[in-house]
Image (cartoon, rainbow, N blue to C red; front, side, top):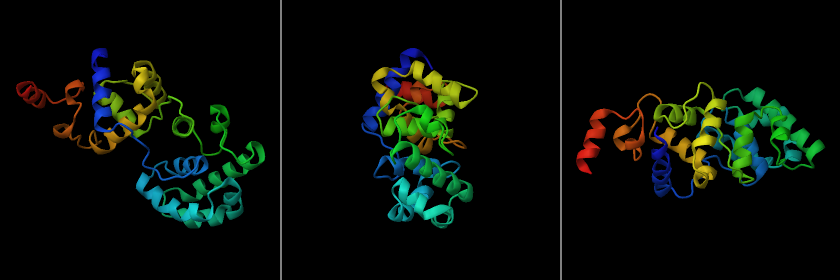
Length: 218
């Protein structure tokens, strides 16, 4: 993607959705951390269905520890890899209680030291809870960044670093949400909905016949 196209690319996404938010349901920092931890290889809708029941009985680290692995497993068994996720969530909760006063730390190193919390999860928490301009590169962002030419990379870290370099500062805070939603609903994996794409004119992979139509209509 041409550098000159990046600002109008994000400006267009912003007009369509001025205040994008995560589709995971949460009411506090711990619930968000738990939901993102559970979301690996699962849909947000599937996670929300499970966490509605889970958070009703355990919405703090102390309550999650008290519920235990078996109790957590019973609530999240509809989610893939639920047993391992339950173990990680309870252990993460224990560490939060014992080492962080039951609070989610505002520190990347401390977040990534928690079981089941990788760089992507830490980036979501740092962005959504603490307002940091991070890029949580999931499969949608990885695909959109490569397909459009916005920030090509061979792995998530390369894409993340490319996005941090190329996204204009005024769009950094919400950029990863715009890209996730665009990948989830428009720039889909199997068949991108190019005919519905509002930023098609800036995309490196835009079908020539659709670009001709855009030019003719302008």
